Length: 318
View 1 (cartoon, helix red, strand yellow):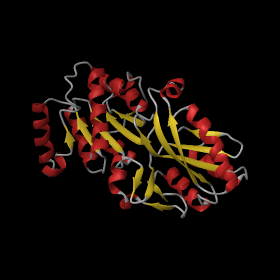
View 2 (cartoon, rainbow, N blue to C red):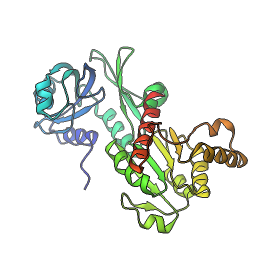
View 3 (spheres, rainbow, N blue to C red):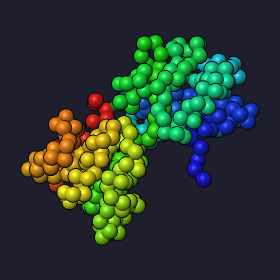
């Protein structure tokens, strides 16, 4: 059975009468080993789920969270994380962070938390928007209210409020179960992506070990996956009909990244085929090819590094 998410844990603890507090990093300075939007759920018993910046930080936050719970009011907490403390937690270096503590009920209304948890279960994106300093009640906004933040996946303070993003996991759809995909799949998982691999070629799919392979035709498999704005799609087969079918399906979706393996000459021929299939020039400009950042990659693993780097750069820099 899967471990409850932070939102599920908060809701369960609150409804069981144990009390619950949501701790969220709102600012990080210097080389602080965390980022705005990092979250920790804290139960009235002292149990916690999630992480802010390593065990030493959590040990300082939890007593403050329990005090906020007893008081029944939100509060902000500023912390200095020394280099020594960071190293003890197996982190690179320290810095300064500010943490917002919101007891469920008085500062984070249960109906609002329940709506967040429901959206999480359904794969919908929402933002929890809290006035700073804390006092007035928070609200929920959709992606249209903060388009740039949702595009780049960055929580942060803006216009006197803290915008904490709650979004579905990043996803990567890979067409082509070859050597590059064998390296790319575990790398992408480490970077926080859920990964699906598609390859309709039975002999290739049967020898792939990094993940289960969907052997349906690419257009069918991609349509079933329903790519969203937090989905990246890559084609790696070098089998033109397979890659073209995947690209045509991907271009019909809001995927934030579409990339395809092949040389400049290969890609020029590909663009001609896709244009003949009815794709307009502006759609074809979405395709990153030759795929990956130009790091002079040679081996399959190096090419996988360049692909993942370009995906992340596209996500964060748009």
